[in-house]
Each structure stands twice: as structure tokens, then as C-alpha cells.
Length: 308
Image (cartoon, rainbow, N blue to C red; front, side, top):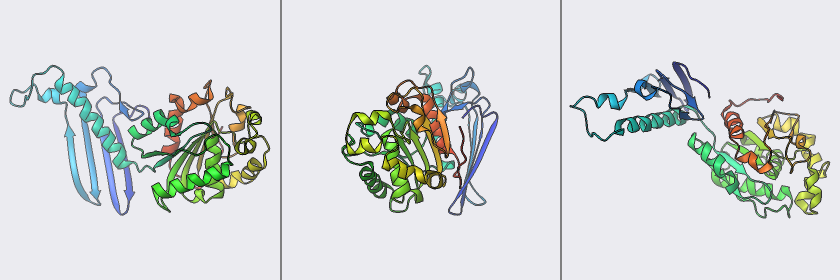
């Protein structure tokens, strides 16, 4: 998010309850879930939060003033350690930010699906980023991860993992990297995942195949070749099936694993190009994090429009 200005108010209703939070910042910036330190920010910090836990019932109306100002009063002072109260101000402000974000904004849990030769650890930075912003993040390890078995078989592992973690009917959002994007697509389009997944993001996935797949004669890599039967089947109804949920494909034309890079573009949802030079860097690039964060924050749409 960018600059909030002087006031930001959000209302979320769920199960008959209404949660309202109103934050007033004298000087405030919110960037990727963090309050940024600006000249004079903490000296002028003033947060007012109102949280309604039941319709018409006020639970709290709290004003937090800078503690280092209150500490100037000898009656209030607890310690004279230099910088103690300013540090405490910053910590409390961070807690309020996280509380407001996680209480007001309903977020689906997120499942991360890795690519060939990887494990869930490839998402270490992305997982930490999303967790810090309030998402519940989960990652599975596909086995085997070398494409020696078909992607349709690996998709069954995604289905089993989702049912174990989120129950048989719980909604969640899905992020797939490289081969993991195709595995995730099969789950969404052929194994009933489309009834549960509400937001679906793929990162550098060979939706139309990659020439690099000719390097290995394995079942999974054969499926990732251009015009393979596997891809032709998935792409035949991609617009219809993926169009029912929020779909985003992030790609780079410099990708040496997805050849050509434009193979990641899809005729449905949003196609976002980032000038990232190396395939693997896509899951650690801050610009990619920003796109993913935005995609996972968007309201659920009945039908996604094509955006390039």
C-alpha cells in the first residue's frame, strides 16, 4: 500500500459480527505491512482504533500517545534508559498495525507449491513475507520432485495436503512456482480444486510448454513440452475454469528455464511481467512479492478479466 493520508477505515462483516477499525495517523505511511520511520513520525504518533465485536456494541475506543512524551512526567517515568520509550513506541505501533490488519482483513490460508528439483524451502523468503503480513502460509514437498512421474500424479499430493490442512471444504489461495504452477493447475482444473481455491497465482510456469523440457525424457518433462497432450488438455478449457477465480500469472521474458518466457502468459486473468533476470530469483524478488501480495489481497471476483 502507499500513503494512507490522515484516515483509513475498513469494515468487515462475518458470521453476523461487524468489525470496524479506524486508524488516524498524524504522520503515517504503511508499506508492505510495516510502518516506515519518517522524520518526526514517532514524535507525532497518534493512533485511534475502534473495534466493534458485536453489532452496535463498542468493545474498545483507545488512543495511543507517544510513550516518550508521557515519560517526560516524573510521576509516570519507569526508567531513564536512553531510547527506551521511543523503542517501546515503535514496538507498540507495530503490534497495532498487525492487530488491525489481521482482525479487519479476512485472509485465506495460502498454499505454496514448488517446482522441479525444489522443495518448500524455496519459498522461505516469500513465506516469511506473507506471514509477517498476516497470512497463514503452508508449503508441501512434492515427491519425487525431479519430474520422473507425471504432473497429474503430483497434483494428487496437492489435493491430499489441502484436505489435511484445510479440511474437505475450506477455501484457500494457491501459489505455484514453475512446474508447481502446472501441478496446481491440474489440481484446480481436474481434481476439484476450483471449488475451493479462490485466488491462484503462478510464477514463471510453462503454461504453453518450454523448450528446455526436451532435455530430459521423463514423464513430467514430456508433459511440459510445447503442445504436449497434457498441456493441450489443460489449455482447452483454461479460460472457462480459471476464469471462475482470481488468476494471476507472473513471468519474465529473461527466463532461461521457460523458453520462450512468453509461454507463461495466459488468455485469462492477469499477466504481470517483471524484468527479473534469473528463473529462481522470481521467488525472492521484492517486486514479485508485491504482485503476489496484491493478488492475494484482491476481493474475490466471479469472473476475472484479462489484463496485460
